[in-house]
Length: 227
Image (cartoon, rainbow, N blue to C red; front, side, top):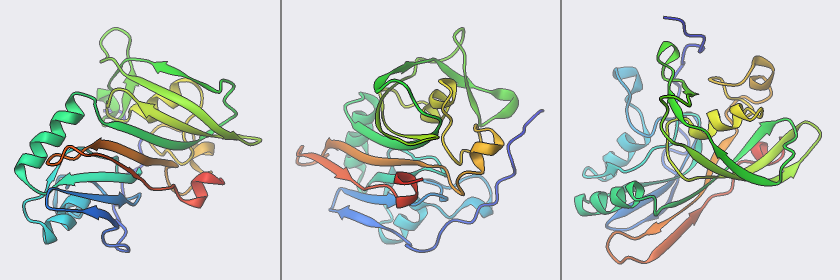
């Protein structure tokens, strides 16, 4: 099997142990740092994760959605079974609003638009994904340019679907890989940042018990905003 992905050295950050932004009897909302898994991977070396850390305080907590290892930003977990069911339903029905920001290579010409490219697992290089018009699953991402400089663009991303690595592959496919993306970017773009410059900035959903509409927002790091 051919695979050109550099081997993973998993060294999750220990500080902050958990960056909690909201907690009640049903949910906990955190700012996930880059470099830590949402849920444990295979093997003892990959057990440290946001979920395992939350379980130390809330043993009944459950994952309802995920952010990639290298992606930072807003993440919600359920603290009770009924909350888990209600939140997962919202994600399945695509009633949850998500907004990401990314710093990409090159100057994007369009101020906004829709990327509509079907995706499938690249089995020879898994877990990488790729565009496949014949067998891929539908995937759509809306984008809006926030700012431009001489050789990069800060862009807001609004995923309509939630395919694995969707934002990373969609941006690569239109010629603007994310800075620091060790999976998809060419070496010169990877070298421009020590981390993937992709951040889940905002997440909106209905509270699973009260049905109150909630919006959580965490600004990205200065490096992403001013790379």
